[in-house]
Image 1 (cartoon, rainbow, N blue to C red):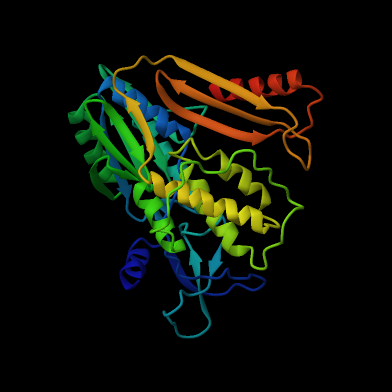
Image 2: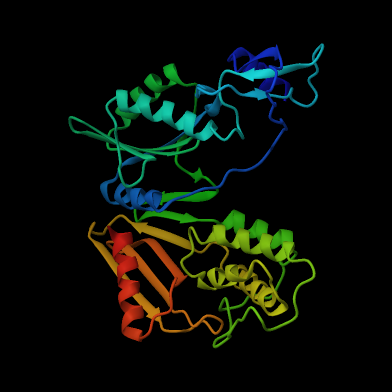
Length: 361
């Protein structure tokens, strides 16, 4: 914490000043957490990198948010544990973690620097930037302060890292192996992605690491309703478990049940919790289940979609589902209850096709 404060002061993040009249300082606290976030763009990039044989690397930007300049006048209370003489507050010159403007200011500065270096920003995903320089093609994916690099020229990547380090202090994490909680492994067959460590942590925290495995995530023909069953006295445990299971859907397309369970977050009941425990038993059966992005496939996009008409017993809405492949590699999938009631199975099918087409585009 002392080192962090020293870095903030060295970066001229704030200026100690008396509070201006009619101004209210925002609070300040220490937060320690593990960051998780991922998008389908990463899966698509891994597929192309596997087929093309591109180099994959990872960078981390030190004190990323401190590089973002503030245009508004913002005052902050002194950090807990650090006192000052008199009624002094911090007038922020640069953005801080937790500030509403922080992510936007940092990304604006970082992306504008990359554009100056010749990169083009994707209109479909603003965190994706590409650069064509002669025979060299480089792709960057930015997730807050984590940067994923894919390139067909390793020497060009090394030169780029040196150039970028002059503008932002970087931590070179080397070859891509562990990114945002995802375990990445590479072989001649392709690139695999799984969340085995995370899965075992979830099972351990719940106390089901030694449970009897189940072959399916839910028993066949089970109908869940928001009105049937005893209401849970403490729904927080259910919400926390389902939230952690939802993160597993990044690398596991076999978690349709989790999406169904997430519909009952407001008032979960005992039958819902029983199915959650069944899902955990299913995860115990194959904790390392994940995706393989084959190196020997074409790059044609293929999509499959279906719907289950009026399947929800509470709302009579249809369930739609789709999966999108690049070659033989699955990169995107979803199951969702339709926003409106379909009057026929044909209408439900057309709505499912529309959603899948938007995802493909």
